[in-house]
Image (cartoon, rainbow, N blue to C red; front, side, top):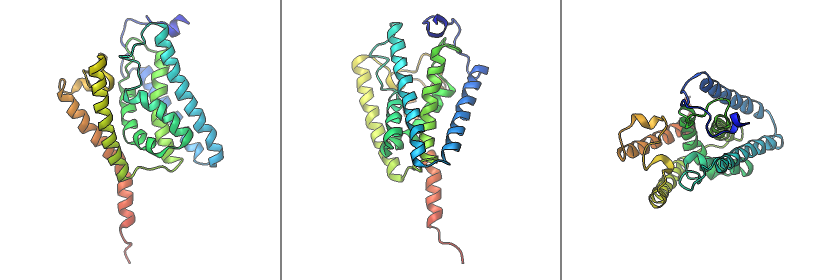
Length: 244
């Protein structure tokens, strides 16, 4: 058990795109494909149980993350409050899956997928690799954020609109300002807007603080429009009259 839950697991940092990393990515893709492909054939009543199952896994996985940090003495308000994008989306996606909340869906789809994908490609794992608990916790939480957003789109028939884009942009930036103020008050680095993370991430290729924050804003706008684009194109073609 010490090998699975221990604080001092390895002296070597997690190796990006190693075999164990690629296997985790493959498993997330496979699980997502199986869930979405099978659930599209079922009635809403039968799909209810799958949505609840994903929600329960999201919540339990996040709760064990807090318990583990408490057990090793690493739980602090500077690091463990649910103010990182994916940290808050874990709870929101669980609520979305149970209640089919459309406002939460807009955030999960338009920015949650991109944020969770970045975390999967460059996971904040430090020295924790397979088979440590932290390895499973990271990929389960971020993988299910992506799967739940795609599930609501491809199975339940949810979709973003242009109003969704505007809401996510406005409320997202208000949240950004709120977290920026919180970081200043308690000395935290939620959303990684006080400084770059200590572990390897895509932010490493960006300019130093505060200039990379502007690029993050531009990238967020790009991904919001990118994920909305298929629906915008579909709407445009629907309005084009058929040729006679």
